[in-house]
Length: 43
Image (cartoon, rainbow, N blue to C red; front, side, top):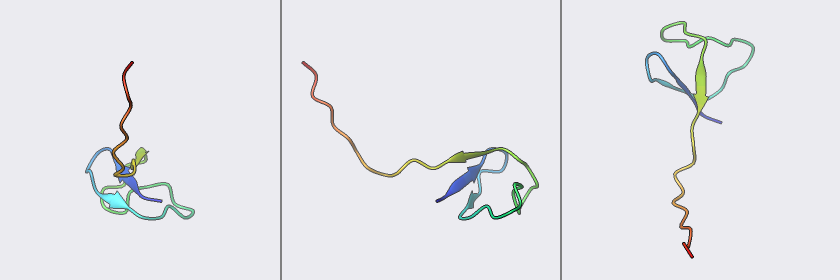
């Protein structure tokens, strides 16, 4: 699963044990959404 640091914007593949960004040391991440386009039919 890929996470993105909210401070520097770098992508991190795994968070094992450490919950810090290896680039800037920030602790808040967001999950990356899959690149799937979903179409919803409006009625």
